[in-house]
Amino acid sequence: MQLSPGERSILATFQFTHKAREAARALEDAGFTTLQIDRIGAYGYEPEPDQKRPGQGAVVQSSQILYGSEKVGGGASGPLLAAMPEASGMAGGESTIEGVLLTAVVPAARSDEAVAIIRRHGGTP
Image (cartoon, rainbow, N blue to C red; front, side, top):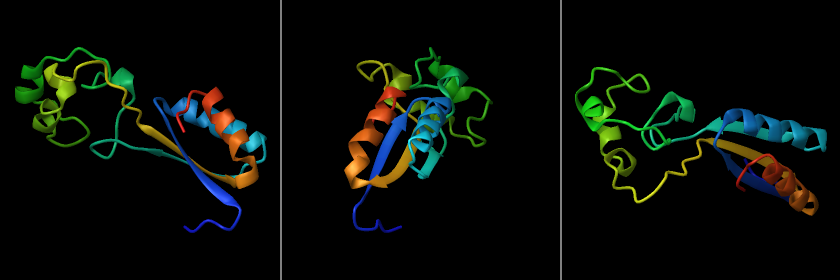
């Protein structure tokens, strides 16, 4: 996609899908119409944090990740997850992974307004 003259694209991340949807509704109410919400993540899809994944604030035993039979995300990705610093405890702090991307194409003259709406709903542009 190529932007028209006078347009600007805004990419904003959210931790929760419902927050991104709220922001999109508020943007639509303000007259912005070119919007898209996508899930993003290291493995193509990041579950919501309440699904107890490493890097999402959950306490996880590495033995279950390495040797358990549960498949995460439909594939045998346990060894990949175990290699994440968040799973090993070596991350040095809490993860700030945000797995939802809101893309908005707005008139450049109204971009500050769109960014303010996104921030009010918890997005990080």
